[in-house]
Image (cartoon, rainbow, N blue to C red; front, side, top):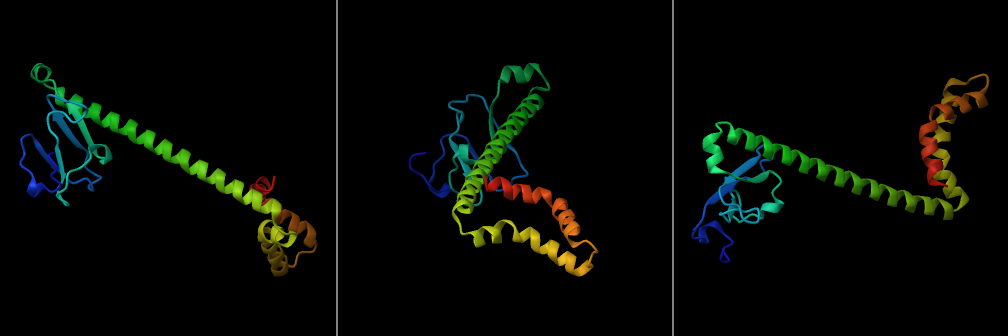
Length: 175
């Protein structure tokens, strides 16, 4: 691009494509007859808003597809098939990105859980109780105070059993 950073400074010797990468509802599909390294015979994809050159790898809603002109003449549905192929590849790519992001989130959660686990192992008894027991015990005691059951211990035990899932999560952290 000969160092041009702004669309007004560029003299275009190849095909120019101007897109809006922030329009995530639009999947930009560019057909090229001579793809080279994914960019093809054009090297000028510009953001219509900023009027700056775009890195095609950073634009999520852009696909560059090679076009076989002979096949396009022979098969009347050629471009429809190519668009479908581009969309399938984009879906696979997005699914991969989503899976990678989910994996990263899970790894961060594991790391946070490990930090919490280490904290719970090393904190004072009162801090441990504040973080692990009281958040479940206090609502049960409040319910006992409100309802005044005949057997408050059985009532509290049932209350704790009803909230067993969150209690188990905390117990897992303390192992």
